[in-house]
Length: 493
Image (cartoon, rainbow, N blue to C red; front, side):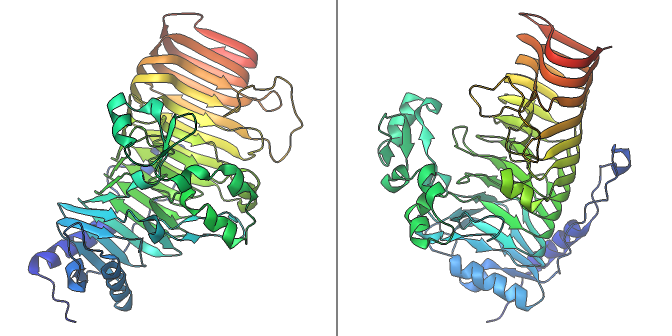
């Protein structure tokens, strides 16, 4: 087979190669409150092929899984390069990226993933740290380096074939349309894409032994995949494209180093269960800039593993810069946790807009997690129409009846110590501030400065130590400006 690129493709390839290797502009690493190296971006050879060179058809019906496999195998054999995807609708099963390659989506291109759940077999990305299983992601890369997804196309994960939907999140007409297919819960409040998904449960998954293939296969359709999953990869770039309609979390870099997301859009329906936008987990040296989020769960979220497995892994998320991003919908604009058992530190978030999110800035953890969140620096955030708290740090996450008594401190005790927030402007929130530490481990060293928050109620601080409010205006309509319980060293300047 001959691979002859058109002149236009070659020009695009050269431009893409230059963009992929160019340094990040517009960011001043020297102005960060911690030392951070400039994030390295991929180095991709200029060699270019088109997906159509491998027999692909962009009509939305032809299965192009084999064409993608052949294309990436060819690039791998030739030392890497760019795979151009022209305008069209390219139906495919799961895609595995290779080192030194760029998946380039041209204007008008849509990657539409298969709606057959059988095309996504079970796997384990780490037998030791992750004995549980999940379905193969639509896009994945394991132990690769210098990988990128660039261009102006759209990647659609067909999340509707996987996700349960709660009736309360839809209009009556939307619910009636949805219920033409699928299966309902016994109380009629939850729709499932299939009867087999309905019959699965977390209890069945928890009872499945790590090596019991039959038990895991019986709940396979319940184990929704993350849409984009690079694991243990170095120099990863996502630029310009739109990621949408994921089965579960949308983009999840895991155990990666030098990750850049630049000018991407990440979308999920507002009703998408577990429809997070970006989950950065146990990664270091990460730059997220100019991105737009409109999702069904947390928008920009930092994680580092959950409970004992996360502590055993022991890889924190660190050296992260997030700037100039917009969040239009989501449970939280910027979130840390609740799976932060490996720790999160040295993070800067600046110059972002949160419009209509449930919470603006959110830290969440609970007993049993362990891990420490330290040295988080947030500045220049503008918020409008926040349904809940403008700012919250809650160490009783997902507990309906928090205990009032202290428990012994150990490795499973979470720590939140060292949060600096300045230059916040919030117009419209239910509550200005909610800090809720543990009796045995108060939230420590929180500084909120030079900020104006308009909200229904003021600030509530419980189980905290060393909280400073410096030049903070809270325009609240009910209750007290600041209510503090079990808190020491509260300073208002």
